[in-house]
Length: 532
Image (cartoon, rainbow, N blue to C red):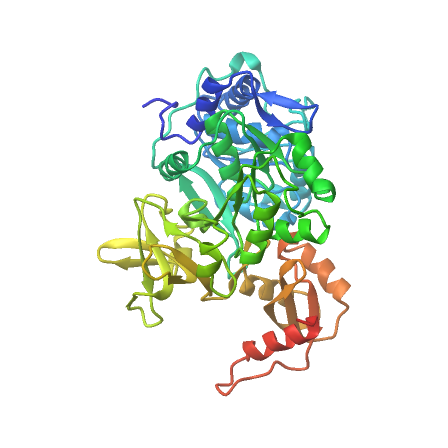
């Protein structure tokens, strides 16, 4: 089996290399670009450094922002035949330490911000944590990919010597069942859950996308997602499979959004629906204001019909799709192409349908009692895009279903089947897991984090709708504490995207007739407090 086998995720990049060897694979600002040929050579060099002793690390962490080390590091890890674990250097130190530990990361590729995060790990005791692998290594590079040559590295990490003469001649072989990457989702116990995604799953996924979309080497893809968010894989490997260009989107670009898209020549846009509200609030979502776009994709949150209509009017030359899927089903598992008339007619509660489940998969809807439902119920899916299970098998309980001799993933999402159609529409979560600006968040994890704050006895998090979309409000009991103090404590525990927006103190939680906390009453109170 060859490392360039079509089932390997990195084969997408090799295909782009063949199509457009001297074309830009990555553009970081209008003056800085990395060609396919350059990125390939650098990735082979770094992969060679990772495999210098003749063996590949089991898992390679990529601890970097949207810099050259992040994108080349992702390729280098794949070329080395390892499982790539994208990590965010801005995450709380303890959360990063836990993910490194759970994934068994044996090598890290970091930019300067990531190297600083590694130093913080050592200061927080990770250097003596027995859970970290004994064999650890780090490649640290500047934002443009220049390897830092100093020999110091925070214990127990050792700095790897990067020698172009030791570059791999080709990517190492991988099997279809090998994990290409591992991402972490929010866990109700307070510990993140690792989701391994195989090369075979990504192969099936991108084959379907190649048939559905007409991406070419002339396309320029936005890259709005952090690399530890699975939608980033859509951007990268759709673009690289076509020989197209990837452009990371800086936050400041939203201040002059139409001009930015024109300057960069963006033709394929992908983000959470929250971006639509942001662009609209700044008065930039006017008719035909986004003329360069020919494809627009939204995922990570429920897409409202009004948002889709406004975006489509601004990008009238673009085909717009609402795509849906949990990490466990490899990025997205359904797709609905927006039609200004029929999509709005089929919308329920003002939401755009999510479309039909991908070919090659089976799905069913479960009623509350576990029986099959014809029209409405929890969506369960099985097929080649489904993960084999969580990194910790104990997390599988309740998320997977054995039925008819097959294993199904329970999405926890309530769906309704559109009459006379295979298309589905999202109605909401069955449990306490929510989508928050693209992040899947277990409310129980937020509750757990708030309870760890000094003076807090108990906490309950509810969802409210604010001007910027879905927001979290925490009700808590115990000692009344300044919201600023609570927020400061939570920043040490939770990523910024999971932080609540408001904190309300209660003497006691309201109870329903069953003497359980009345979540409905708290949700109603949250809406009243926010003016919704």
